[in-house]
Image (cartoon, rainbow, N blue to C red; front, side, top):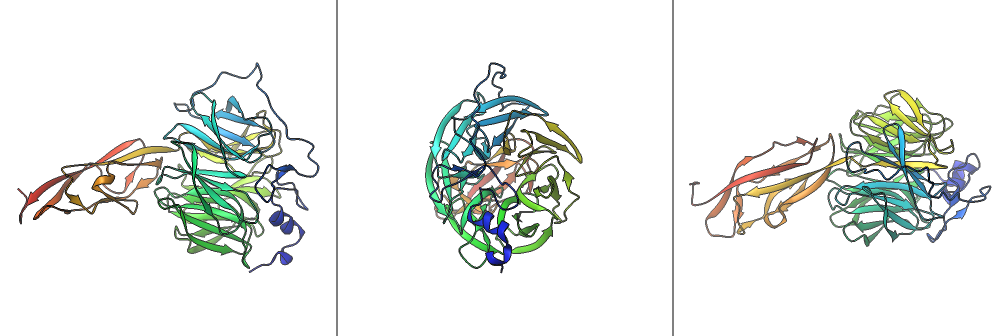
Length: 455
């Protein structure tokens, strides 16, 4: 294990303050109170830059239909840039004094949830009209993800000395739970499709430097934590191999774990890494290369790092839409790198400290239904991504990333509370695993019978 004394002045600055200027680079232009209250400006930054509506702004674009959108957050202003393809097509203005880190699209309510760390709010944006629906109080909200299991929103709270994950019900837009994390300063968060939620804590209370949390979204309980001899920053799940990728800032590595947080391997990146994200078309986890030069490094399902794709400036975080990676260039006049393969072009925006992004079409709704069962059916009927479903829990719907697979098993026979009765599976409308490319319904058809043989 490594102590902060061994890590040098830049490590101490990152660990103890995290969002303020370290001894070798400016991370982001604010620092957050330990209590999670309103942030203060970092040394050398005179003001956050409020942006107001301009007569030149285009009319609102509907981001729930094709072509869809990428929302770019901004740690330096209250503006959220909306991009389609290679063009900025709109801007959402958060309240003055706002600044944002993470964002996630929630398809069930067609809204974008943005972590407004400066206001201590999660701002909710209607993806059709681009109007702000409401603001939900959460201390220092940073990373945001949407669980396809619980259909809840999970928000990492960037606080010290202890971090937490706030759980938001998108139907009521209320905080329904707060889950303590293994350490402090959790910034990024992601979920396994049909599985658990993961967050990385910059500073652990034990002898390790950072730590990683695994949260069960069915119970909203912390089920596992592991220490990391590195400052744990970005976290992303590769939905193709169900492995968890955690970026370590100090040693230029990405640490790979199983879904149960068992170590798999360490991937050397060769640059200080920050956030990361999953590209479903390429089945890669892409790391944000922060220092000494900006760029994006793809990691394959075989856990091999590809060549870094250089960009004009440092990258904090990013997102993918189809095969395209969007990488905001923090500190480079609001530019967003549009990465297609190894070709990089730049999208100019009015952003000031562009940080991360979220795309509006990354998931499809998959619904499991049955026919032939009646209320006497007992026990498990179908197991979806290792989650058992009973008769009363059907129909059951999950939201799934495009291009990834759902695994399921229909039980046969299904027991009955009626004496001598059972239900035999006759057919399934799809086979498992099922690769998702559109919203789908998967139906299991049963035949009930009494006696030794079906009728």
